[in-house]
Image (cartoon, rainbow, N blue to C red):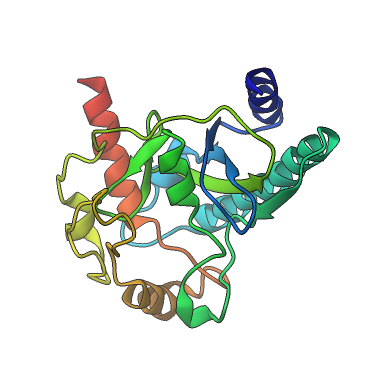
Length: 224
């Protein structure tokens, strides 16, 4: 189990993943999860100020496509070992667009894998890369060597994300293990603002303003 877990991680990173983690969280009858992390470009994110750029929109989609490809490759390796797998799309809304939710929370699986924590911006903060990442999840019944969640948050509560959100969609709350599923943002307000102001950039537009603010602060802390 330990050898295959390490081999799988090395395989995925050799094919483009920036980091890989493993957790024991359930999806239907599959009890283990592989989290795939793909880092976004610092330079592309640095160009986001009052609005997302066309480059960021394309970069976001390209990273998602890579994650979905890695999910398939991961699943193929798992099946070769006799296991079952279910890849969760990197970015897909299910049960109607008004749910603003995917099949499973990539952030939740990543946190349980010990790869990072969740900030006041409701973003996953990677141990090394901060919020400048995209995530994917692959569930399996194949036993894997799992990580442990971090006990301290990587978010220092600076509030830059809350102040910079043009939709005023962030509640300013901190993630808590006592209530891990509590919402940290108004998803409808966030989505409505993007549709109203950024749809000219691309269908299903994204924002990235809070990522920009958080990345700068995260990098400054690491440099201290």
